[in-house]
Image 1 (tube, rainbow, N blue to C red):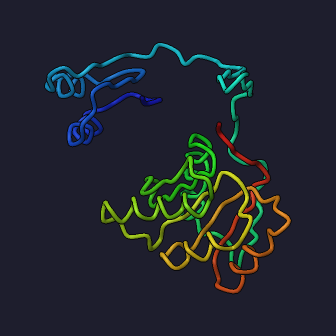
Image 2 (cartoon, rainbow, N blue to C red):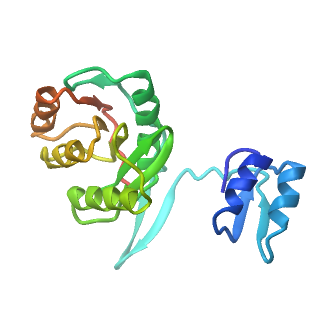
Length: 204
C-alpha cells in the first residue's frame, strides 16, 4: 500500500519483486499498463484513508483498547558525542517513523532513506537488533553510514555497542530509562550521534 501515486519508475521497481496485491491512491497510465502485465496481480485504488480514533485487539479473556500512535517525536535533543549531520537527521526521522509501525521491541536500520533491516516482536531489544543486522547482511547491504531507531528506550548500552561494531554511528530513541546515561556516555566516548525524542512508540 502506498500513500502516493505510483509512477512508471516505481512500477518497474515493483515488478522486480513479487507483489500480489497493490493499493494506491492513483496509478500513472504507463505504470498501470506495466503492473497489469503480471498475471493474477490485484490492483486497488484507495479513495480515502480511514480515520481510526481507537483500536481494538482481542487478547486472552479480554480486549486491548489503544489510541493510534500519532506523530514522530516531541523533541529533538542531540545527546551523543556529536550532532547529527543533515543526511543522518533525514534518515533518523524516517527510521523513527518506521519504528512506530513495527511490533514492540522494534529496531529499524535505515540508509539513504531506505529501510535496510528491521527487527520486531522479539522478547528483548538486543534480539531485535541482531535480527535487523542479519537481515541487512543477507541482502548484502553494508551498515557503514546507516542509522538506528528504537521504538522505546535502551535499558542498557548493549544495542549501541552492537550497532557501533556493525558500523552504525547515529541513533534515535525516546529516552526515559533510569540507565539512559549508559548509552549516552558510550556515544560520547565513541563520537557517535544520539537523539532523544521524548516520544515512545510501542505497537501491540
